[in-house]
Length: 162
Image 1 (cartoon, rainbow, N blue to C red):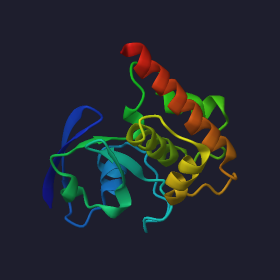
Image 2: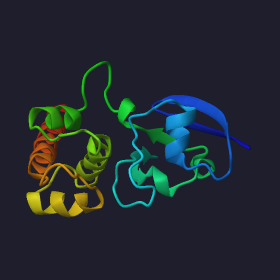
Image 3: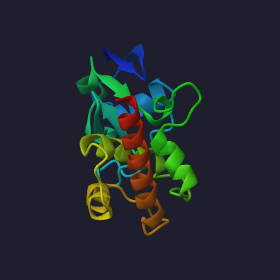
Image 4: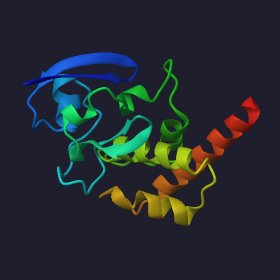
């Protein structure tokens, strides 16, 4: 067992974990943050995406001990002060969720996509960037609409702040 310390959703946490514990299981079982889903355990579905030091990572591809001393944001840490993050709000408004299983990973991936592309997105880019996320309910149409709407909202907020 190894003591693993990291900052999760702005809060420093430390827990013992076996060296072979995947980060996704550490987050769910040790921290009780069950919004990060276990879908495939093989890095194919994207349901387990979290942000590590600001970058979207599939948490089933990383051991908890490898994430020591990093800053992690899970779906639970995206909203601030009871207000949905613009990506969460756009998924709700544009019906970008069906059963909801892929939704946390999609939202975390979308947030990263928007940040990396500085909100300058088109449908083709969004579809390409989301290829590593599987939704078994939809044809991605509403998810793509939600990502584009969130990118517009986040771009408008950034311009207003400047």
